[in-house]
Image 1 (cartoon, rainbow, N blue to C red):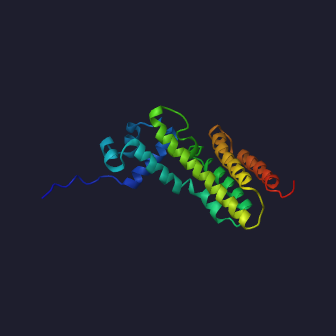
Image 2 (image 1 turned 180 degrees about the horizontal axis):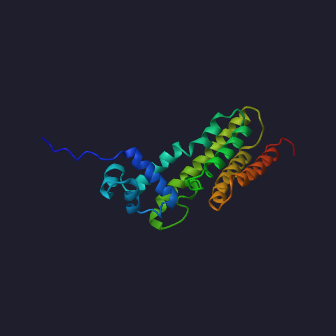
Image 3 (image 1 turned 180 degrees about the vertical axis):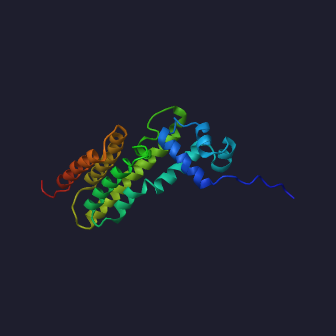
Length: 204
């Protein structure tokens, strides 16, 4: 009879949440395997056995982040009745998430690995793909607004409008990291929604 491997003595879900906290606090390159092992309460060998490499673990962490702190802005895009309301709710949900107490004040998709060593290019490109997906989700919601007759615009203008609001989302993350308060981000949102009325106007 084949020998069985030693049973796990830790909860993978709990360990993954703890890894999320470390990566969020220190960024990808600022986090070592020893940092992760200490926070997760398991040996480095157990990390490899259960989650794979540091990069593999980070990708799993980002999937978890997407279903927790990353979900409210996406849900706002999906559930609001109009494109304008969806964009407004997305911006406000983003501001809420990146200014919560007891959590790092930035979006991991934007700032977890913005620059760094060449060997971490795959991680940066992975996050860039996520940001491109964010832009696509905004553009799709705007296109739905055009289909519903809320406003009219060309495909080029629609792409630019989506990029503008994606830029606002990403810029708010930088502002929050640098100390901007929730009230200060609300002022940014007010300006961004004032721009909506000009950018989607059917008048010259």
